[in-house]
Length: 301
Image 1 (tube, rainbow, N blue to C red):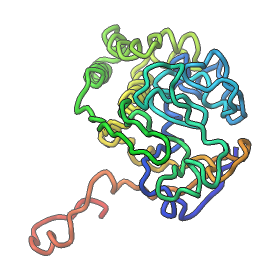
Image 2: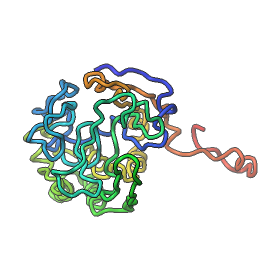
Image 3: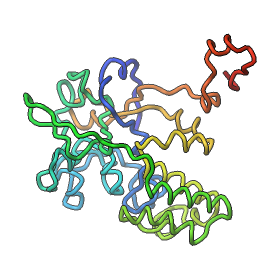
Image 4: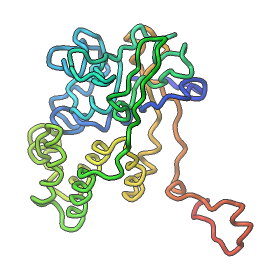
């Protein structure tokens, strides 16, 4: 699938809307608990084809509604974290799945909730960070007031501690039953099998969890998924020395100005971040450098 480069789109519309870039969604596993590029049973090559929602996905996707195949057969954290065209949104103070909201942006394009006709409230990527929305916040019919409940970002969670402990154990002595135990406690909460079983059964790299380097990659990804949007990724990526590579990924989203589904589901590259090794640390301000000439500027600045 070819990406189309668009300039100034982010500045021209959607300034007041929190959005999720497409690359973040790619971090999340298939429903088999392995990366989408590793799952032998997941059709990665055709993930941008269109497909109608079916009974197997009734809790996550609107049945008989056409959306992109990339939204099918994903782990439950994917559906809990992101709102997208054709996805069910069990919020708006509604608890019953049968009456949950459907985030439908068809007809897409001008005047839609993700289109150019709504420059201040439009979503420039077509992907919403559902995880950051309190389920009791109500966005009612046009002409009535919105009821807002603030989402309280957790400072630390048990899953965070489990994964930190697993990471420490792996770095100290490599894979062990204790390492697997604490990773699998987090995965079990989402309905996924353990890492060893999942990789052995579905991955094209079944031995990945059996060595320190492979398990390190799994733990890092597990943290990015589980703690996604919780203000942790930037710090993790810096201490792992993976920030430059991860932050330089092109910022992409769907072609939200388009009305037809086959045109809407074309990735647009909004911009490519300019990131280098100097961005691991902030510079000392020039004002401070002038006040105190004994200060030494941060490396690479």
